Amino acid sequence: MTLSQYIKDIRNPHLFLGIDGGQTKTLCILGNEEGKILSIGKGRGLEHILSPRGPEVAKLAFQEALSSCLFPYDPSSFEFECAFLGLTGVSRPDSEEAKSFTEVAKKIIKAKRIFVDSDPSIALAGAFFGKEGIIVIGGTGSVALGFDGTRYSRCGGFGYLFGDEGGGFQIALQAIKIALKYEDACHPPTLLWEKIIKNSSFSSIEEMVRSYYAGKIGRDQIALFTKSVKEAAEEGDRFAQEILLDAGRELAKLVDCVYRKLNFKGKIPTAGLGGVFNISLVKKSFEKNLDPSLYEIKEPEFPGVIGALIRAYQLAGIPLTSSLKENLKNSALKFIGVGLTHP
Picture 1 (spheres, rainbow, N blue to C red):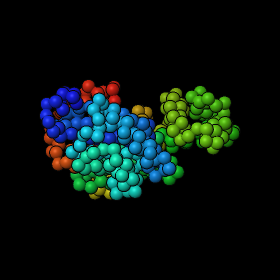
Picture 2: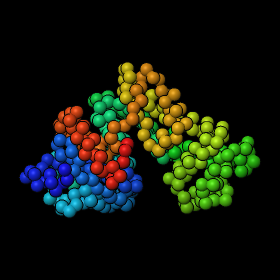
Picture 3: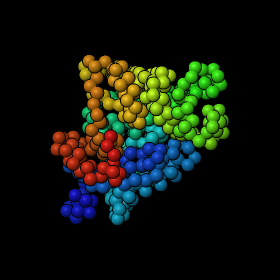
């Protein structure tokens, strides 16, 4: 069923909105009360909401995503039952960042209720269909979040200076440090130097470091060198292998932290999300360092943007039934590759 067909079928459609706002893009998803996804849209990425450009960029991102989702209809003609936004830079729903994003969202989105939380919160809801469990995200940075059916608790997520162990930036940073020492004749031979240079436009690691300090490259570009670490590890470099094994251990520690904070008992569904889990050595180390009597490792059921829609249903008091779950799965299929990806 398309959005236009749905609107023609009923005079006052009950619509629910989920938004997943990241640094590279903002996704918007529209669903009805039965869990049928009607449309998706995409807008630009967000900047930190408390930065000088943050509110204006957020306004444009929400407008673009909503207009794209509701095209060809006028977004101002819709009132949603509930809109849930999981946004980058938000740590908690009562944070200053969440309040600032909410102020912007209320100017763009007409809804009976608007709620803003972190992007890990919607990843967690998507992973386990709103049920209890723990996720750990290993992207450029790292953070773990758990839900016990009532409470949420997180561990990590303190950024590249004070945390993010097991994330792509820290993996790449450790490798670059080793390669720099090798280049400076202070480290045993390693493939890391060769692989990093091959995957860069630099002639030396020192040149790369100077470019970083000069602001010519940023943390996201540095994090891309996880590919170099993976290649070196696959070719038997023991230093690269240890970096990846350590990343898996650190990500497992974040899960253990959340388990203790929420006083879980027994076996809890657990999932690893993010690009670093595509590296087999990290994934194997992560799983090896989790107690099998405490954790049931699972693949996530839905991506984060559908997790935002699930949270909207929860806030509106819509029961998360098996039929709603089946409708989400079936209706999501036609959007895979268009705006949705597998989790």
